[in-house]
Length: 121
Image (cartoon, rainbow, N blue to C red; front, side, top):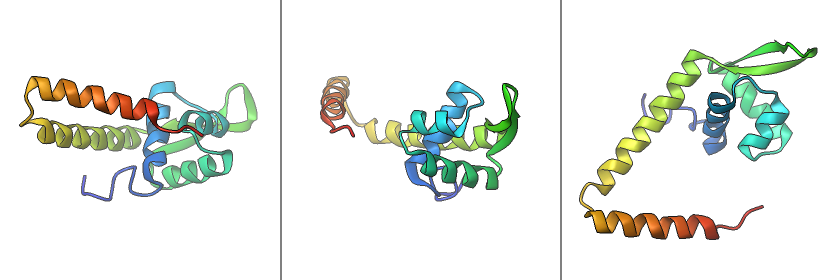
C-alpha cells in the first residue's frame, strides 16, 4: 500500500485505532468505538464515516436494537489495517537491526518508562 493511502492517512492514528478496535472487539457501536479509540463520540462518528466511505467499514442494523447501527470491519479494512501494521513492524525491525541484544533490551526499558510517564487525559 503506498504511503499516505493506509488507514492512518485520513484521520491520523485515531483512524488506525478505529480499525484495530473493530478487529479486536468485533462489530461495535460508534459509542463503544469512541471509548476504545479514546476520542469523543462526534470524532468517532466522523472517523467511522470516513472508513465507511473508504470501504474499510460497513454499517449494519444492530441485532439487539434495529433503530441503531453497528460498524463492522470489512475484508478491505482488515487488509488495510494489517498492511499498515506489517509496514510499521518492518520499519521498526529495520531500525533495530544494528542494535545488540543488550541495546534492544535497554531501548525497550527506556521506551516503556517513557510511555508509562506520558500524561493521560
